[in-house]
Length: 420
Image (cartoon, rainbow, N blue to C red; front, top):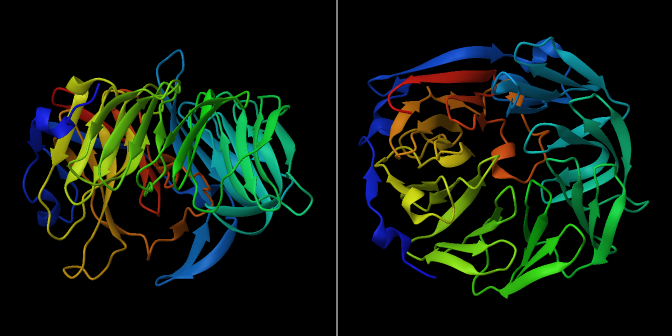
């Protein structure tokens, strides 16, 4: 089954020029967006390290917000990596500290906020190449901490994913080229050599069922036993990492030409759309909702990746601001995204606004602008490759509340009014 997505769907054009017209917080008529919580992570301890920006000292930390299911509904959770500990703040609970034995330099979170891998004693690193000598595996719910050894005595280079059940995928492309999977008890389930390298794209089903690797001309999908499920030759290089739904049933490729959607366990093509280039696909924490940046036009989002009727093509005019890069998506398609200023009007690409959009593709709220370059917090300690876990943002499954960081504080916001 194949169809041209945009040709069959209507285009939602939101309020014109809203991004250009206001630098202060803006809320659509009929709605209220209320700040429930504002937290300064430095109130809870020393940062991982100190640096400098144009306004003076800046503190490097790891910080991520989550919304946790409980018997009383979803509760927000904020996890902060500081100099010698994790600090866990959760709605209606007292703060918790989890001491660390290593000298932390970064952290990788599971999408559901229950597990983390703290990277310690790194020689050097970035998201695409981390040289870790040792790590500590943390069960955030219980506070249990365990040492997680490097693949080899010289350290580990590659990527690691922490799944929602606490299992781990990781691969190393230095002396050996290995893909490994560890179960929630950190037992090694499989280790196999694979043909990947520096320019590989990768993604994982957060439920732990599958992992996807894409070298420049070949897409491969493995299950958690190391079995190759399917592979596909690629006609073009992928400009960004693919997307796999939480249960592994849907794979979405954002290419320089458009979108391709596949059944995750068989590789069957479900639909494709080649009208425009796409970037930065983001899945919902639960289910198959997603959003993706359209190059130069806006967003496409949907509450079900295989349902054509759920997909919204959202475009909004802006001259001085870029279209929002998706940061988090609710199960109903409500999207939180992040827009940056465009020269020459501001001459400052570090200025940022957050945008909250309805499931119909209408802008409901825009934050006041803030500057990444002059803020006292640097969240560089977050080493997740997933777009939605790099900058601290999160959204409830219903979209009613969301969280973001303006690099000074972490804010929990609640949306009221309208039909959402």
